Image 1 (tube, rainbow, N blue to C red):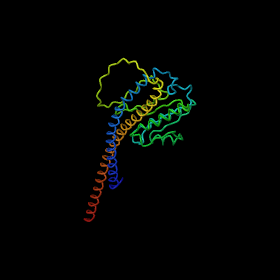
Image 2 (tube, one colour):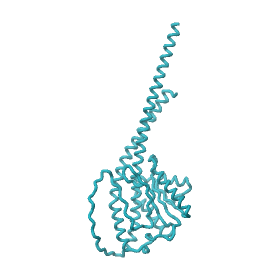
Image 3 (cartoon, rainbow, N blue to C red):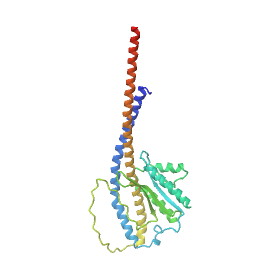
Length: 304
């Protein structure tokens, strides 16, 4: 049985860990609110971009823009894996990484090669360990992604798609459905499907529902220059917006499982401290009883 000194050291160590996990839980809770507010702020622009794209694309044939035209065969795809830089977030990272790994195996069995863009330190380390070197890698930006990061990914994807070196681009990330639920999402962004409905943006639990807007009849629009020229400028902006939205969506989803994991760790630490305290008292009581018995036994021996 451990001695009192060892038990006391263990209680202090667990109590210190409990303070850390409790602090991380509170920080994650604050970041969840900030991240969901950022998604809500970006949603109107993103939704308007999709509506504008659909309106212009109706007047353009897919063959007029290479980003709309599907390649005859898919020989190589680009997978953009979006995870976090840090751990302690439950299965948040592993779900995405396993999905990408599963996609790689499935595509290779079909004779399709897969290039990977790793967003987050966890993704870079995961793929390098498996001898799959990412073509692009981003670190230290998962908690606060930037539009510049999204632009760099979009520029690489657009150039490779137009050159024909890749035939499809897919985003794989955790969509923050609400403050407690994340949904693994695989979204094909190239070739651009202009008929796809825009993703519903995340609303916070306290968000006030806005009244539904009345439908309006679209007016006749004259384009200057031609619709194809407008679309050529609009598509890269749309791709940057889609990627940025996925990045901030993932950033919001990262904090909720971390808060949950730290809450569980805090509860476990509390239970462990209680168990160790009971053990400490039991050992201490045993030591006191032993000392009393020794004193009584010694006194009895002297009397004899």
